[in-house]
Length: 170
Image (tube, rainbow, N blue to C red):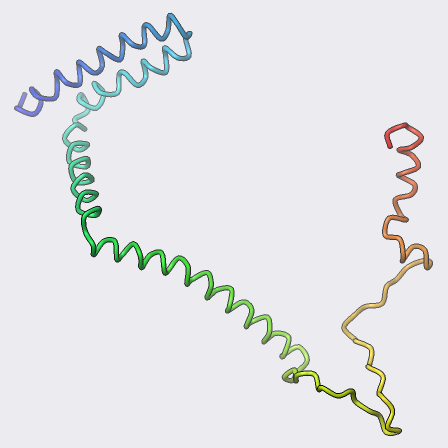
């Protein structure tokens, strides 16, 4: 047994003893689930001591405290935090802009030529009259059995609606 064992043994044993007593009272007052949960937490200090993890956890804890205290009082570290924040804003904005540019480029290459802005005057045909705009070949024609079916998108649900009304649901 070295010096560190002598120091940590009573601390871990004491924490475990207090936890076991608290688990006993929790078992009596709040039931088995609360008592067993508290007993599970209570045996952890002795488990840590017996496995030799006390020194590891102490080293990690002190390193973490030193890093946090150095971080909080360091203007250089806060400058780094500000730069992280700026990057968190700039990268998504750049991705959105890139997607928009790619979508515009895809529209240009689909037609095979660059899209020119619309002229301010209406085009005229050979007779000097206003030319009729050409139909857009990219839009498919609506296919339907009748005019009523095309106008009313819910027309195909009439049978279902009738069944529901018969059953008194709707």
